[in-house]
Length: 444
Image (cartoon, rainbow, N blue to C red; front, side, top):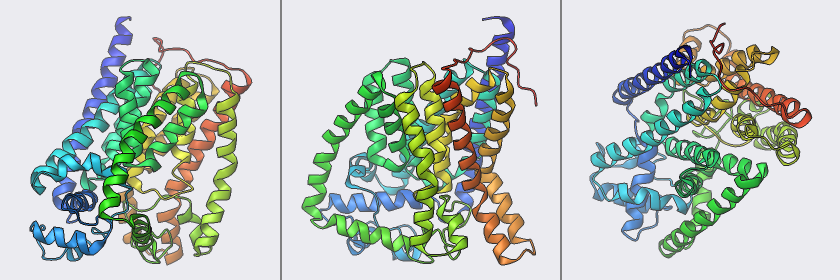
């Protein structure tokens, strides 16, 4: 490696480190100023403690009782702090992961939870930076910096998405490098158990890409089953009707005006609001049958084309990264996801760096779309947008449109762009990108 290339890698790494510092500092600042911090972890911690006491973790009254027995936080009722915190909506496979934290007192548990989950996410960032920097260190550093300085909601909420996304990315790195394979299998199985809507697309991509990746996907599924079966038996003893109860809890979140309602009247349309395409189509007609069907129909053609390309495109070392860059944004559009789930765009960084390294006509388009995508999906830009809307004199319809459209719109644009690249580069010509060269300096 020449002196110039070493300097580029050092500058790129410094940018990522600065992003990590900003991520932690801003996360801590918002954490202490936000009254509902760690609510997502609270909604896992107390149901797990309930299960440890042989209660029903999917029955709100049982969870409320455990909350009161352990002193709660500042109120006598869980509902006063968060009316939805007693409604468990995660599958039984999440409890083995939460169990070690539930054995600890609340304050110790939340610190340990943040340390491990955020640590997994940051580890994934550095591993994928290392791979992307082999193609274009400048692009890798820029995108990860944008991702990190706008990821504060992962810290504030305590959502398990940080661990699910981080572990998914770590598993991809393990399989890509063919190193620490057993650890990769455990990471992917854990991510699937924690949040399948964030890790499922990674597993599906590995399965469809074939070869050794398909083998790893099937192996990770066996590991998941080995963990899931005891979890199901454990939960079934305490909650024989857990499936019906979990379904009722999910429906309670999604009622008109609920925090998971994608419609204009939703209480979940704030900074960390729902970002699926349903939020856009609900503006046209606020009826679940309409906006769900419209979202599925809009996403099905690109999803089918992506699957066909994964199965039929020529094998290449970099095919996996492009395939992941297609499905990472696309998977968030047809089904329920929130703003913090957009951290899965981490998986787009190697593909973006790979395309930027070629310095052809597509490179500048890659820069434009990816920078726009990483910015518009960020926590801070969303705060600024909602502040602007709050102090604007726009009509109600215009305000709702500005809240709902930007994130789904840019996610769809990113996915379609990478899908076009997938078809053009790997299906038609199997053209491979060059690794980083001395000319890989980002210029806009």
